[in-house]
Length: 88
Length: 88
DNA sequence: TAAATTTGCCCATTATAATAGGCTAATTAT
DNA sequence: ATAATTAGCCTATTATAATGGGCAAATTTA
Image 1 (cartoon, rainbow over the protein chains, first blue to last red):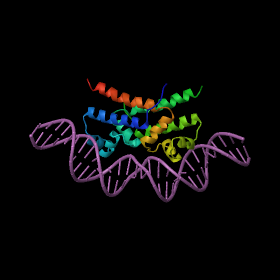
Image 2: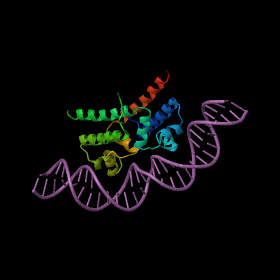
Image 3: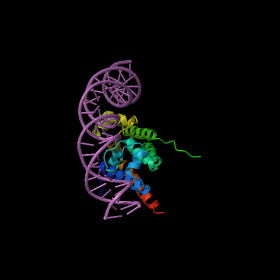
């Protein structure tokens, strides 16, 4: 028996973890990341606290950590896959 | 020479395309999708118009199209990869 | 082709994300 | 150990995402 208990909240928690982890690995503070992305520290804190940020904020964070291309691939691949599977 | 002209806006456009394409393949209207996700049609229209939605909205759309797990994998893998690469 | 459905674009209102500031606890560096 | 930096948590304000409504153009169905 297989069930899906992956919630929107859990995914936001993982996004939070991503920002915090990669930021610490890079050795910069919330303040520094916020400054580089032209946003307030509170916004970064919200992301890293699994709050409900905007797509702009999320995508800028991804871009900073060189993950925007890979994310875009995920999106475009998902479109392509569905178009193929819908042929059958 | 290699350069990166992938912008946040372009990615949002691809997200817009994803929602619209998969929704049409599924054969439901913006209204029906909105209703199933407990949100207004305007919110879906914003997503499909590449406007700046919230993470909640985006993640619910992914969830509807069975893409939440794969997206979560992308996030968790990105954390794992960085942790490994930071060891060297 | 007529009717029905869907979509896009307005408007106004409400809910909430983003900002700015200060304060304290915790962590890191000297 | 203490000084400096960082992070979490407030409050208040501003910007904007989400909602609900109506209407016209476009698309789909009968």
